[in-house]
Amino acid sequence: MPVGTQGTVKTVGSEDLEALGFELVLSNTYHLSLRPGSDLIERQGGLHEFMSWRGAILTDSGGYQAMSLAKMNKISDQGVEFRSHLDGHKVMLTPERSIEIQGELGVDISMMLDVCPPYPCSREEAAEAMRKTHIWAPRNLAARREDQAVFGIVQGGVHEDLRRESAEFISEQDFAGVAIGGVSVGEPTEMQYPVVALTAPLLPRNKARYLMGVGHPKDILHAVACGVDMFDCVLPTRMARHNCMYTLGGRINISGQKWAEHKGPVDEESVFSALERYSAAYLRHLFKAGESLGPRLASLHNLAFYARLMQEIRQAITEGTWDQLLQRYESA
Image (cartoon, rainbow, N blue to C red; front, side):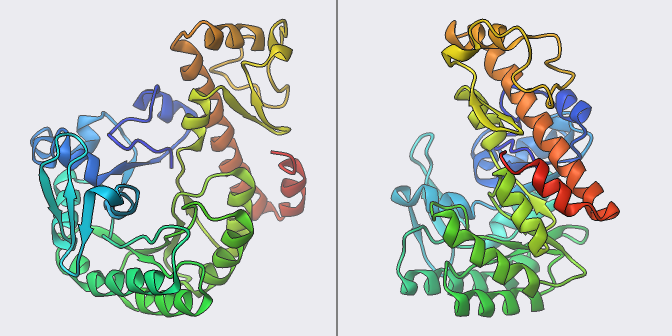
């Protein structure tokens, strides 16, 4: 899922995402509820109509913002009391209100409101975040509309016993799918991989498994091998805005001197239609000159790279060519 936090994937339009083959994007409950407001979006016909998007939409619940905006909120058993990052007014986000907002947005998949512990945190903090997540789970489900699909979220930090407990509890609830939360929050990769490898196989086999916020190509490949189906990450567009483009040989800095007179593409094996007419030298010039076309073209390149990665993953699973796929993305 490309990340369109505020109803837009930065620098690209819905028509671009459709042309690249994406069928699902992510937006954010907290941000859209503050601006322009879920009630306004509902009056506009829902988020699909509002952003003119023909595919499906998943919305994060605001749980991540409870962690990332920790200095501006207070978490209790009732919910999360925020100070709006826009104007400082108080906002109370409960499980019921989060699901209600997502219902007003009219999205296809609503995420439960959970508590995402930061990294690093103590075992006690991870256990308390899990406890609140568990007591909120039934409240999220009770608040859904008749046709509203809600995904549960497994927490537990880096602690095996907590992850097992949370996976068992969340899997027993009537969620349409189950996500692994609380990873990619600052922990090193060597701590992330064991959590994913442990948790993913514990989740129901007949429901979608979603790893939240993970998007490095190798991390995706590792998680798919563990049984994960869905991913979101800001990396393709965020890195693009910071001069970085993904290639099969790894990320490259397009503003580097080595591209100053490079007439060809940055990667012969990753020439996508949106950029095939532009040289690496021209892209470098756009970034050096501060032209907005540079981040847009780099974003289209990176999104195309990820779209191809996911298509090749599906193909490798179907055709039994997983080992060859791993070799292809060995340096990415």
